[in-house]
Image (cartoon, rainbow, N blue to C red; front, side, top):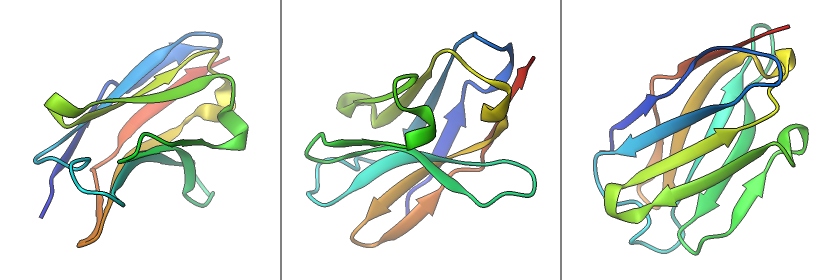
Length: 117
């Protein structure tokens, strides 16, 4: 089992920035083929990938946030970060941390991000 704890959500004006953090209860990246990332879900919409990062350091950024969001990690802290810049009202959603491992897929409880126009 892995517990994921997100933090950093909140209310921000359009054009502003936020940084989300996701701390895992144990090491994720010490094992090949694992990955951590962020998904989001807006009301009435499907959950979509925002960004993820693999054990090997490869990142995958969703088309709707390319050039504005970046994902990074701190292996020593078992933590993944999502830096969100130039936020738009359409970025408003619940953001979920995700860990994909050989043993299963785990989700955090979600953190609300609201971008006002």
